Length: 339
Image (cartoon, rainbow, N blue to C red; front, side, top):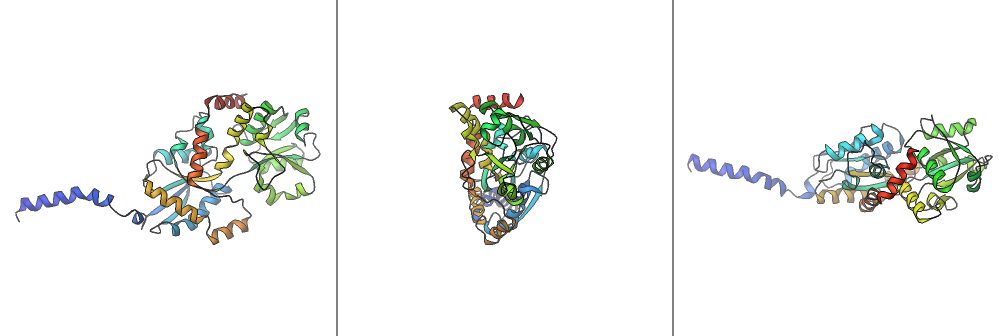
């Protein structure tokens, strides 16, 4: 064979390399690779907890058994991580993440920090929904729904844009409650401590926090739960009003449903747009299997965590419905929150 003929064969071989790589069996892609779970918050809290828990078990259910690690990227209420995942992260299946459950709502409300399209993420699955509740001291005149309508009730806020401020504002506007928002509390736990000190009569926290740290308040009638911020009542709380029930007409109920939709997103994981469909299916199937892992379930039980997994396809629909909400509803909420 002549030298020129050999050069031609090499050139053909090089040209075929991309095709050979593309033809690599999908179930071998992750072998020897590392998948990074980017957590949009600092260590501590349930976003970090579930992100690291997933990293411990996920790899053994993904074909090729890749290494899985968790990495924190806090900033801008987790939007730094969401923007990075959407715009910069590898789109080959080796990058997934978890961000604030309000990710779709904030896009619909045109938050300037948002540089992503929530429905274009490829959602992998949810570890749990997040039921938030409004706690009111039993001795308060606002300890009933009717009482809240006739008595100013101080409630702890962790700042503008937080659920602890947004929900009371919305309820004041659509249900006639008289929450008085008291800012200056770093977190929901601080709000509960403020109730103990008599600084406020009410605070917002998660049901998981209440049942693991303050159940005596409810058993001893020291406090009551007036609302659960979900579209429909949780099986755990069949006698506590879902916030949507506070609406008296279709427009108000639509607004409250939009506000509460983030509860159903909860602690959910997503991949960037552009990841090949076969790899997304592997990641989703592996996530579903991981949520049934006996050791993971034992961790959840030991920590007394809320645990309500949902498939990636189910989360995809919830996110799309929220992100594509009627602009009239989003604009109304923007105005209420700005007041």
